[in-house]
Length: 159
Image (cartoon, rainbow, N blue to C red; front, side):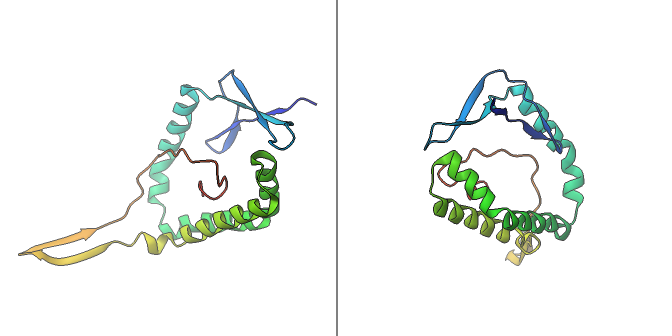
């Protein structure tokens, strides 16, 4: 059976990459090819960034309490699929199942922390930092960003 070619998740749907170079995703313990991953192109990145930038104004206008509800749903899905995610980490990264379960658990803890977004976004004031000068800090969403994360704790670091 041919290995599945992975896709990019852009604008709420799975789409094929325009990249033509494919790399094998292998189980490090057995060498078995689990899937093929395309090397996405600059066009793929531009498409993803454009979709995220288009979605940003509405997302920014969504009250933090409502945004946090998505994180609670995400956390519930992680709890529901914890063992499945750990098995994927085990097969793709070669960690033991126990290590993978711990990594997923730590990732879930990171999402739990992010569920506190409404409180984490609170700003601060300081009156009279100098004669007649007050200081205020307001936390706001910044927009589209990218992260290149290490692979030593695959579920935890990105979360």
